[in-house]
Amino acid sequence: MAKVLPFQALRPATDYAKDVAALPYDVYSREEAKEAVKGKPLSFLNIDRPETQFEDGHDMYGDDVYKKADEMIQSFKEKGIFIKDEQKHYYIYELTMNGRAQNGIVALSSIDDYINGVCKKHENTVAEKEVDRINHVDVTSAQTGPIFLAYRQKQEISDLVEKVKKEPPLYDFVAEDGVKHTVWIVDDCYNETLIKAFENVEATYIADGHHRTASAVKVGLKRREEHPDYTGEEEFNYFLSVLFPDNELYIMDYNRFVKDLNGLSEKEFFGGLLNVFNVSSSEFGAPERKGIVKMYYAHQWYTLTMKEECLEDRNDPVTSLDVAYLQDLVLTPILGIEDPRVDKRISFIGGIRGLKELERLVDGKEGSVAFAMYPTSIDELLAVADAKMLMPPKSTWFEPKLRSGLFIHEIER
Image (cartoon, rainbow, N blue to C red; front, side):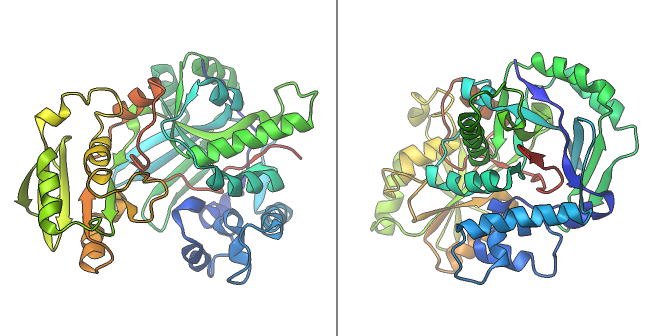
């Protein structure tokens, strides 16, 4: 069963919410982040990426950078930009994109659930990528980026969410990208109801935020070592999360762009493809179904249809994924990309950027070939996690993205 608890959120005062809310820190490069905060002193990106407050070339992982983040949080509190709720609450967070809404419950999840496998993952993390967030959480004593979790829908939770949504919202605004963000405070009279309801949820699943989760857990374990008399109820035993029912989630394609053909001629490259795909020229457009990959090469689109004989032994939750088929039968053996997590010859392009971005990259001579994927389904994600297996990196792109800064969990003050 899942331990999912209400908490006292540190959050923007209502009038500041729209200006504070920011996309997650990891969707920006250093240069993009610095440009994004120009003229936006209230944007939470200033705090999430505190190197933006320093000159170019300053060590973005220096101790003074993380101390700056803490200083800004404290300043926002002193100025009344951030306020802290007096009671423990759950919060409903609805995101609406292109007329489609999804409703999450903002709450705390247990680090022990992560350790014990109740909160399940589907990706490996890279240790060096965790260090930045570990330092950020540790120095600020605050979790500032919520973890996007999924759970198998429970009608009693859905009914309560709809009941709460009949009340006036706490926040209600449309961000610059057109996504509508609406938040309700759940009356604390429902706290016990939701605690018990989540105890009937067998597992939660990390949809987005594997590195943030691992970092929050490691800081929590560090604080346990620093407090050997801990009871398990301290704030550092939990991490900030937003939990969505699986039937409301939307996964977009996550596409691949490769810089060169691994020294192969065009004929050799296509020869390799023909061993595992039926290949035909195609018009612009995304793959129509699972088992089809679209490829853009030399100003031409192609449809790659997976061969039945190559699919016969690919029937476990991971090998049956389209992204795994491409990785195992094309990217590794043909294009020589052994570890896509670290290989600089491959880039991953989120579906939100569209297929035109793939054309731009290839036509602009930034690389040789791009592959447009059919989206991984939420059922595939849950099956992989339930089997305690791992997807290839960058298998899922969730939209819309949760905003940072709307909810902060202080783990120790």
